[in-house]
Amino acid sequence: MRAYTPKDNVQKKPYYTDRYWVAPQVAKHDVSSDDVFAHDLDAIKAKFEVLDAYIQVDQMVVIINAHDNFAVIEMLKNEREYNQLSEMSAIDWLATEGKFEIFYQMLSMSKRKRLRIKCKIDEKESLQSVEKLFRSADWSEREMYDMFGVIVNNHPFMKRILMPDDWEGFPLRKTYPLQGDEFAAWYEVDKIFGKEAREIIGPENRDPARIDRYDTERFSRLGHEVPRGTDITNGEPDTPLVYQEPEGVFLIEKFDAEQSVVISDRHR
Amino acid sequence: MAQHQVNYLKDGGLPVALTTIDKVVNWGRSNSLWALTYGLACCGIEMMASGASRYDFDRFGTIFRASPRQAELMVVAGTLTKKHAEFIRRLYDQMTEPKWVISMGSCANTGGMFNTYATVQGVDRVIPVDLYLPGCAPRPETLQYGVMMLQQKIRRESASRAQKPKRLM
Ligand code: SF4
Image (tube, rainbow over all chains, first blue to last red; front, side, top):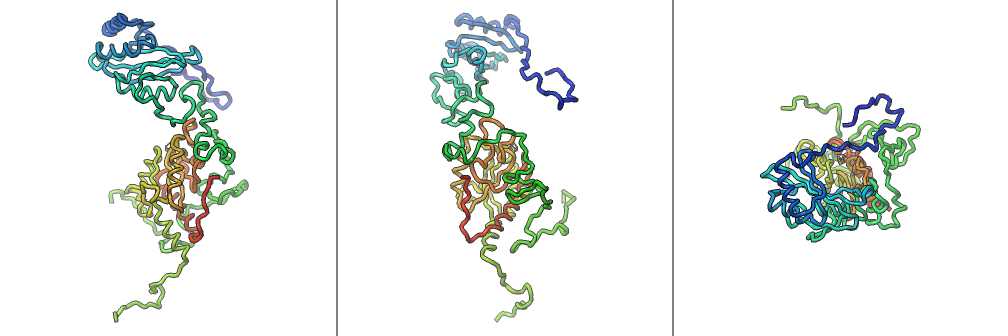
């Protein structure tokens, strides 16, 4: 949690002064403090190179080389009873290290333990698919490709999963602007009407706080409706809610508020 | 000859009503607005609630249809993603004339809280909208009121003339 700061006078000064606040790291413990994990780690170490290993929030984190990922996970599944891949994805560290961190979150039902395998790959490097071991990796790897552009080898259907197939860019990369690049901003216009329609339709309004009190081209206030495009700088008339035209509608009985009954007994 | 006790000449007794073609056609149109189900997100739940027994859209003649060919009203209820934009346009084009669109909720109006790369900032960038409903989500009463406003709008239109095609561009 962030430390409490008095916010009485927030209008006077910028609110988010801790914009680049970095969360403190959770304490790391030695693997030898937990028997089950210590055995698992020994088993991994016997066959593969382990770059780092520690226990964080009761979960063991093992950092391995990226080319070992399939073999390590296969071993954990078949020999160490980690029978579920609950989650996997990538983390973008391109700005600081020029690498993606890939994590595989595994669960052992019998041991009641969770373990995380991590590895790092370069931006253009590809990764071995673990879809053959865990079906859950099928969509996760597609999502990883969709969002980060990490290419996974030997995947049965390597295609974008959330974004449209013809999308450009990888939205979860830190370099991708939240409100989209130019391609994203004009995507639907380009696709449906063609590029020449850009000028007619105009750019998106990306200012969520924009309120034009006098704009009647797009909106009118409920209860103050006026015809489209009316100038209301001098105020608009109060229009009571009308459910029908004043003179009534052909063949329809006019609603009379005086004669309407309000039911107060809901169990009637 | 039957011995009816109807006095045809007294007012109200005449089995005849005089009106114009416009009025009859628009009366028919406005009271059987068949809506295309278009629940895209949470607003869709409110739209379904409007159709269910408590608010009962059927009594207005608004019956939800699952096919654009049978619908003349599109209630865009929810967040329109950029991936979906081309499909909403295609379904709109498939609806038969005359057709109307209600944009329901902040998301459909302006993109709402989803000020992101993946959300269309207002369905009016893709299809022409007749009525915007404010709210996140608008209550069924708002949608009912909106439909009634739309009925008024339809009754004001001229039925005999071909509807002016609504175009974004
Ligand atoms: S306007 Fe609100 S309720 Fe409606 S779809 Fe958007 S977020 Fe959901």
